[in-house]
Length: 196
Image 1 (cartoon, rainbow, N blue to C red):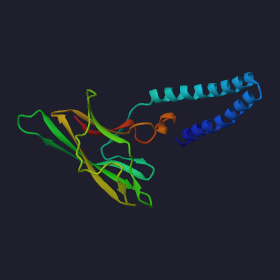
Image 2 (image 1 turned 45 degrees about the vertical axis):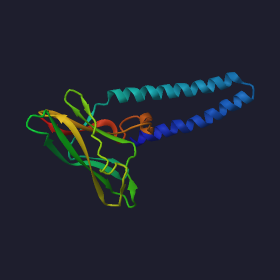
Image 3 (image 1 turned 180 degrees about the vertical axis):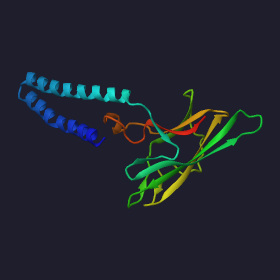
Image 4 (image 1 turned 60 degrees about the vertical axis):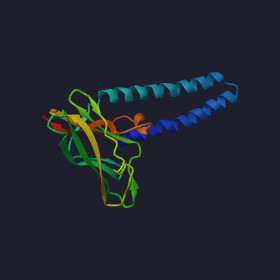
């Protein structure tokens, strides 16, 4: 992945001299030369975008076991435990309480990911978002060096499910959209919590 990240930054850096050449050509009264330089960059960008989309569509979902930890730099997130709590004898729902361990393998305090979402997927593709619980620490809470913080999210799901998967993903704009291949917490990795 480092190669693709470097390739992306190289293409961004390549745009600067091409932009300067376009501006120089326009100021110098050579619009044809400016258009040619711009076309060269458009072709390079189109090739990169084609490869980016093709690889993104071709990559299968990565399936991780429930005890697997995901990293974003020195910060990490993983499932510490899972509890299933029935609502009652006549209820068709139950609570899935997922404890997340937020870790820091670095040497200075860090905050977790600020735009992070978690949700559960059932075998039919239905998405279940967590129930709001304001007393639980947010994912972007500070984690001391070499320490971890536990935070819990509760989900209400139907009983008797055969398969439940957990997705941890960043939301909003992120640079990872433009890098070929997988990036941490890109939403294309699922954690298998329950297999029937």
